[in-house]
Image (cartoon, rainbow, N blue to C red; front, side):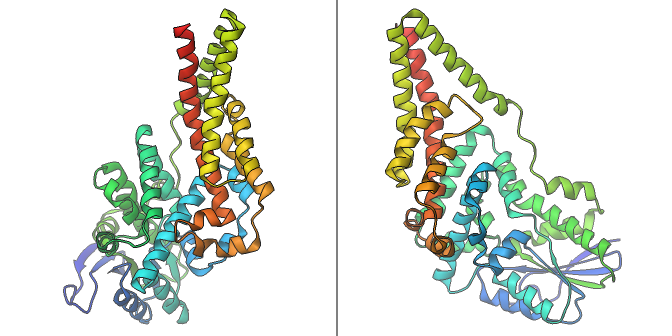
Length: 409
């Protein structure tokens, strides 16, 4: 039967919190770390170097590991593909989280998450297997987004980006939060405290996923380990220990937690419904009189195109991109298969193609909010996001204006 207990010395100042779970003949030592503590990093490195551990597991996914190991990985971005595949928001969020982490590094003189990297280094030096057991950060972010009701999503995104981009210094409260969680959890902490669904996605799901990954690695190991060191943030310690103790190996559960839930069906049809309503309004207006129809269409172009152009201007886009956004938005808003943000980003890329230096300096420049406007890669992402938001707002405000004409005529 699985057993769990506190390791000796858990409460001593020299050691971080620990849990030990014994199951199926394997002893798992769970080391809880503080993500901003050099002492935690040193302890993780020291323990990972001990030969008694046959394998070392770390709270990392491949994407976060790559970002940590290869600072130049962003230089491999294909921006056109990012926009085509609808990943611009995800890339921007990842950059914002990375910028937040870099500001922490500058402020504290200690790299958040260093304990994971140092533990991996120590294990590889003695040729011990290293298991990456955390869920992919992109999947976590998408599940966070899907966990919120549709009316909660825009305020959540706006609040996240505002908090991540606006602070040159990270306040003491957030540093304290990072002692138990990680950068992703800290960024959403205030929202998660008010949303059980958000807390479940950020913390509980990952506890269960990491437990399943540990059991999966154990199942697939060529030589079954007797002792495994698991390095995780202190906030995951109890939940992971409980999950590891009580859960059976369930490949289907692991697969479910590693995928993004399908979106609700009705949002797919909503843009087409809106387009049909607006086109019906135009038809009714022109049927009453050509003058009324032209006024309605003129207001539609002015509102939709104007707000999209305003978004492009806010991103400091090229003047031709601003003009293109104004001309494209009234048309793309009536064709849900293509977005004004995509058109604007494509124009911006053709006029101001990012240089090698933009990709190489991206990670450093976005640490401070002004760098998002100076760097061509980051600015193109802002063009896409701001124009998309402007067009979305313009579609609804312009639609209301169309029907206001009909009812007042």
